Length: 121
Image (cartoon, one colour):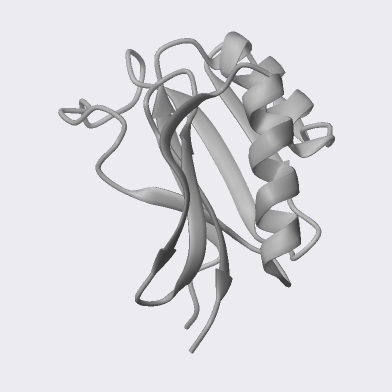
């Protein structure tokens, strides 16, 4: 068994769909007013579900976990930081060295943390 699906609860699935289409340069495979599904190049699935229609009721807000984008080197981290900053994404952490590698964190429109990192062990 191996997890292959991340589900984010969002305030507005249509608005979040537009955000992730732009961010990922990818069209969803399923789209409705309350649910959107992307299949990423890796095969992992990313679902966006309206927190107002999810059952059982969603009690948490964004920011309690992270969607992580692992890249090959520091220059890609810096390039993505520059791109996402220029797109107007809120930046929670500027590029920095951490125990596990070089990283930055941006936030989506619901406060979900989007971490870009290169592992350096």
